[in-house]
Amino acid sequence: MNAPGHLDAAQFKAAMACFASGVTVVTARAPDGTDHGMTVSSFCSLSLQPPLVLTCIDASATLLPHLLAAETFGISMLSASQGALSTRFADQTIDRFDDVAFSRGATGPALLDGAVAHLECRRVAVHPGGDHHIIVGEVLSARVLTGSPLVYAQRAYGRVAPLPVEPRAPSDGS
Image (cartoon, rainbow, N blue to C red; front, side, top):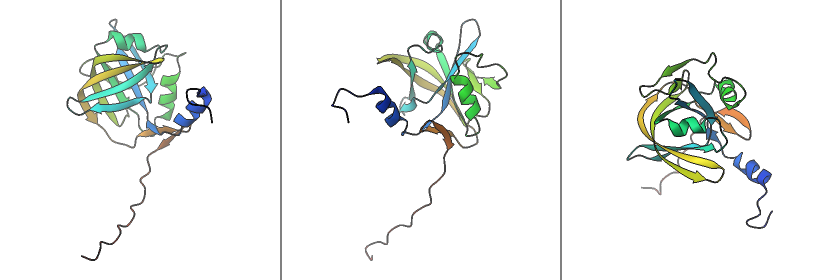
């Protein structure tokens, strides 16, 4: 174990890999009409009133300038059958949207077909976060579709499997 303040980056990454997360593809449409997106697992809800979410984007990510320029962005929560799509949108060397089925959200962003849910958001804040930017979005629309969500943990894709319900302990005799 390292002394406080001297955390090894590999140890930190290994510890964070133990935290299971859902997998999303965050998208933004550029002013010229081109679509941009990337796989993001650093995503969560932030507030119910108003409905806010946050996502953390690496400062060197190719999506970041488009996300900062666009007023709105989309989030597709991937289904358990979309591991290959997640890998595709993590690859910075290809046209990520080539032959990918999607619909256009009302505010413009691409929303990937086959996802378990879609959100359309208006960017309301950007905060520095180390080597990332924290993007806060107000959710303008949410659509729940069908299927089981894609989960990522310990550097592997998985799916949600419900645990068996444990019997309740008997009450104190009343």
